[in-house]
Image (cartoon, rainbow, N blue to C red; front, side):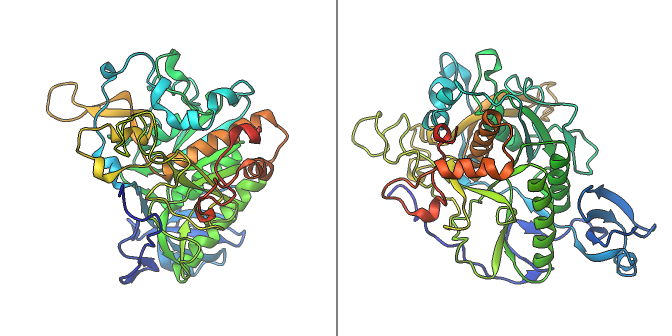
Length: 448
């Protein structure tokens, strides 16, 4: 067997903390004086400090006391801010380092199976995403990466956290840089890797400071994206399981409000379905956010087994034990909870550590290493490079890039029309369970 069942349902147990399940990727608020507020359209009390205004919505984020909000006539409802942690498949921590000396020519020529499976080079004969704008709401995009420096709009990129930095990633967190490359890497002058929409205008919205992101900062980034004319916003983040009751009901309500506003303004929200192997269709009292929010295009992950190595043990490295359209072992699923499936990478857990290039089945794109360049024993420099990651985090930007291509080819389409084009073009692969695909597997050429 290559790995465990693809239908393992995440079992939830334990106590609740503020309406949030313990043991999940949601934790208690880092600060007890930061609140998400749904207003009545009136002014907020002078004793609270505005953290994020969200023009066009009735949502705000403030710092202050619970008592001040309870006594305010301008407040409809409020709840403490909470934090989300990046959730990635365990295979990502097993990744070897990439040495460009091991490969001749452009890495993307043969390592980017995801772009080949999606016929991206053929799609580029129609458009490369010109005239569109895509936001990556994530851990930051390294502006010095040669494959991203061209697409990245530095004037519009923002840091939504309170850590005092700019939009660039903090420390060694290259998650957002990898996601951004899948969307828009422009091949770094012929020596790098390819994104699906390399001519899009890429906006970096950093919401992570280290491993955690504030739910309030994510809401603010969604609304900001809509207000600056973003066509597609990618959110390779999420939290599961959140109880539908208690505070979970409020978080779902304000999320739906922000997402509905974004859709109305023309911003398609492409969101990772999550990596819990969970059946989101039948989890009853729990919800996955933000991918189960209103107007979300939720993306599950697929991937090959044996790309460039002999996964099935027949002595051949030119065939695959599983196709690029096969559901990844970690992906969340659910017929009505997932909109589309796209390449996110898979892995054979039995092959890890055996010397075979099992990591070829993950998604290859832009990353960086955090290195000690001054010799003091402490990492201090982010050095651009290339590497592999897997997850619905990698599947979502493949869809976001495709959405940018559809919008580029059809500039009068609104967000719902772009999504509709992607859904109509998709099909569930033969002999696979629809629960993993929603409308089907991403088909860029037919969508165009």
